[in-house]
Length: 167
Image (cartoon, rainbow, N blue to C red):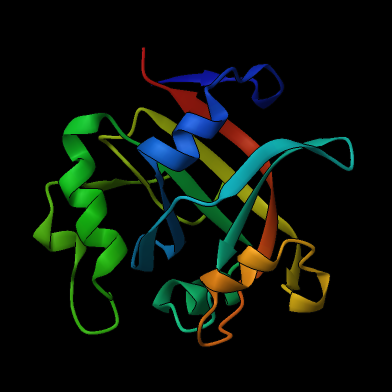
């Protein structure tokens, strides 16, 4: 992996979220959890490179995000799709779901949350804002279809402190 200035990051943003997915991880190398995320954004906010992620409150990773000031966001080559599917559908609350995959953690360079040796893109982020989604702000009625039990996401903005891409 080689480090890249987050301000010079060039990626196919919609493809990364919609087709490739990310693995969101929060916590420390000794105590962490991860989940697959496919909704979010990457850009500039408050004059800083940022990512925006959304997590529902019942997700186990939510607890780790709430108790940490940082998180990693990692993208992977297509060969790891089965691992991402498992990590996005199985809870870490009841066991070691990472142990069911061939992914391995590594220490991140600027944050406490781990990242992954197999990642093709790593974004190390510091939380800088959060807000609970308010359905009164939905201007498109079809958005509510994503919330049949009214379990609205918490939105997090994270400043990208470090970025790495595979060479």
